[in-house]
Length: 245
Length: 222
View 1 (cartoon, rainbow over the protein chains, first blue to last red):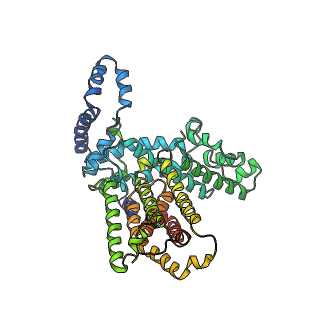
View 2: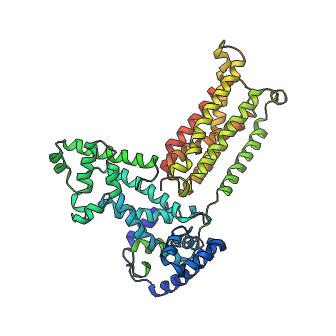
View 3: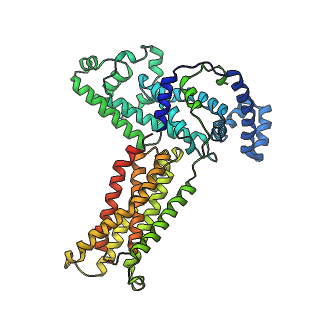
């Protein structure tokens, strides 16, 4: 399978930060202009005239209109170019998707799982890039893949209920603890309190299983079982419902 | 633009290095491929084992039409669901839910229609004779063997695609392949007894669907 090959190549080649950045920037700048043209062509004459007029009259309204365009970031056009084999737009697309995916998974996964999920999703986008239909918007396609990987990661986090060392978690920074995994916090309300509590303690606050056991009065085995079952239930719930934000 | 200031990322480097042009998948092309395969298999099977000798008389009975058209309808629905679900953009549950519901209802409806036809015929007497197990086992294996080429073809398509609901996609692919096989076999088989068809055809279709549901998700993980 493709992803395995890439993963292997990734491990062998390691970090290679020396890229022909200058050339790639020039191409991507040209591509950006081309994207704007393509984007405007897609909106069509009827919408384009007021949109252009508004851009001068009211910048905020113009920005609001942008949100309703079929391809607000130009990602669909970039992917179309990538499908044709153009490397520079492809690199730009992946580079722009990375922060978006980071934000997406930070809201939805325990901190320790976020980076893996982002990388897995980038690899999935790469391996399945032929499934993007250029006639349709890019957003739902990307969201479908990200959501699939989210469910996957929830399952994996449940399967490895507790065998991760607590120090793989990011250091307990109060602000990020409040904002991170916000969507996941909301979903925990659906679980039985005993399951939600140990997931919160071990997966989000970074306590060890033993500490969570002492804190909650559950046995160590029960903590593990509750994490496993709880995250499994969340994965099933997310899979069968529309995206819970 | 965030691009210009983003630090180089080794994973993205690796992905771009591995990168080459791809042809976007088109469900029309995939559907045409499956249709061509089923037609080829139908022709091949009819050449090898022949259509039933009493085809002209059988055409007048509702049971014959039921036996051919209900698997065809199930196969068409299931193959549409399987191929549609290979695009991550359309697999959000809300959008495909009606299709899955229709499939879920189509199979019991076919059974019910068979039962209605059955009620119009004889009673429950001589059940075992009606099941005719020697011919029945032949039917069962016939359908299973005929289902193998389409299930392999659909398996390849599913692996190439990107279903975000692998279990459902796998079940739909298996159901489609088995229903196509039942459709093909129905031209040869001269048993029109709905009970017989339900048991032997139904058994083969359910078995292939279940196997596909169990095996295919493991092979198409992404």
